[in-house]
Image (cartoon, rainbow, N blue to C red; front, side, top):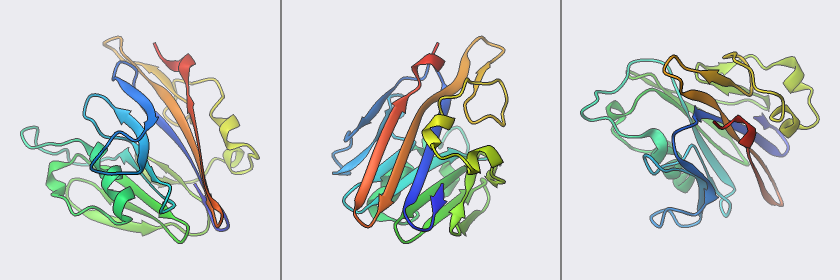
Length: 203
């Protein structure tokens, strides 16, 4: 994610390939105007956009103490609420597994991180920031100097947790892989939204 001047976000979604989903649409009547891909298992999304407000929210799995199975709810509703309001949703955090929730608009980008015990906030400074399941990490020099961010999403997948595009076979035979890439740019004139389904990675 690059801030300062036009705000640009490249989001790569990693998930089990047998978990059903569909590409971007306005699927949620309770959140009119919100656009995002939909997870067909839980009904939420990993990234939501409110183009009228020029606002985006994205959720990543985090590290920490998981929520009790009996009361756990999907994290996929968090981006919908955050994109609609521009704020950290007022929810019962103890019902969520650890997560990182990015909320960004033209004026500010903030990362809210829940580890199962404590909620923290980091406001992203101008420049390039890389966010993964561990939170904010140093940026790969190759990525930092790339003139075409989507080109970075076209590289061959690797069985390496540090890779941008991954493909990993689990012991039970299921595949965990990068399934899609979304490039969002916001400036004073509006917002652009480009979505690419990474077909070659699906099994």
